[in-house]
Image 1: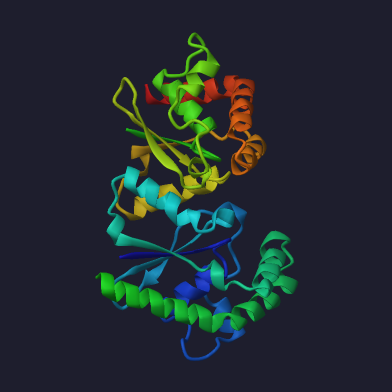
Image 2: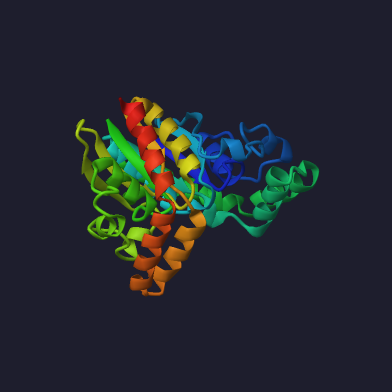
Length: 154
Length: 149
């Protein structure tokens, strides 16, 4: 199964959630600043990367974990991609799109915009990491729900 | 081959481009009549939702034509589709994604008309909009047809 975590820019919430899924970040405590910064693609993707699928790894059950960005397409991103998959006659049962945006808070939005869009990394990055920590256990919960769904469907 | 015309909404410029490709919308036949004869042209709230998708038909070379509404994110969807097909072991070249979005501004106004349930105004506006940009639409389709040959 392929799991595609997606968010606005593919730099924060999707990376964090995918990393929790893969065990790159802990599920029982808040990660440190360095742990966040050691993640691939964390606070590093820019507008030219939007839309690209990034492979982060395989989980214990051999599911492939990807991240992607969808800007303002919201829940429609998954719908559009599933339509494309259907047209291409791809196996629709082999993939799920997970929207991580519902757990994104105002600090993540402001910090992400400041760091990624305005390029003010020194200001934006601490704010986005603070925001990610605030929502962290919501991302952990989302991963648990996804894993439960994967167990049921496979 | 499968060809997907992408527009802000699937029921305006993307549909008109697909119709031109199929020969349903020709200069000889008359633009207004051609557009109004298309079954879901400017039809309802469902057709202006992002993600709206429909198969339009097959051209004379057996290429299948589709439209998909992508809310102004055509380049993003092109990139995602390319990667998505690749990770699924499919040839990204097997599907041609065509950016048929002409004016996100005009399509946003159309969306407002449809949401306000003034579909008659939306239809008139849509016909005017596509007539205004018809040269561009024909050139998009010509480019696709030349590429296929």
